[in-house]
Image (cartoon, rainbow, N blue to C red; front, side, top):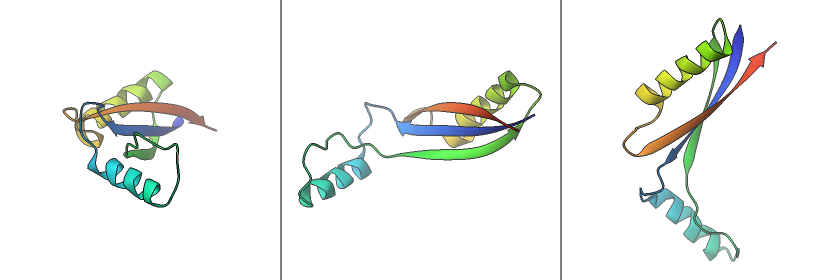
Length: 84
């Protein structure tokens, strides 16, 4: 079976996000109000072939832990959708 996987990687809350701070400053300098605590992350999309959703989830988790996210600084979540 084929699954579309979306992996969201974000800096852990305790880690400073200079890129997010820069964007937040730019938003404020453009005159927008009500925007704060900007955090920048990444979204990785992939197609995974596996026998089951559980197996696909295991593969995506392994990839995220080994190469997609830095476990010291980042956390990740993922979602799977069966491709028909």
